Figure 1 (cartoon, rainbow, N blue to C red):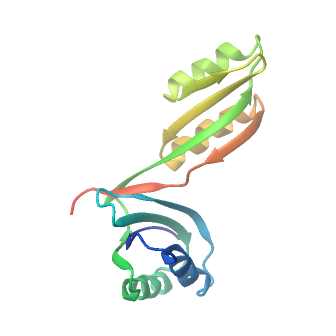
Figure 2 (figure 1 turned 120 degrees about the vertical axis):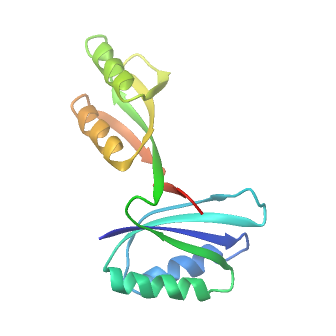
Length: 158
């Protein structure tokens, strides 16, 4: 099962290493990891997506809460959060395919951020399902480069 965990941490040296070590020490591979600032300059938010058994991950969550620099841990489940991911990609698009690629970008509300003779650079944001569908459609044109931010998530209510 996939879990999205949001961890509010003190913005200090070595916190990321300790948090990541908690997962690797338990044999969990981190699918995505995103760290960024919050409204409070002394804190950062980590959003981690991992695969694992519910029971074992519950134990890891409890151990994370015990770390000195961890302020709060949330294991998002079901409908209690919203999430998004950002993807930048470069797609082959010559004069014969450019219009079709642009039409698909419109349908998915993706933005063309750079135009070259034989390529388009595209920015798309959305849920993991939307991103995966868009990427599968772009594969037919030839994706030459791709980078993903990983998931960021926000609780629906406090």
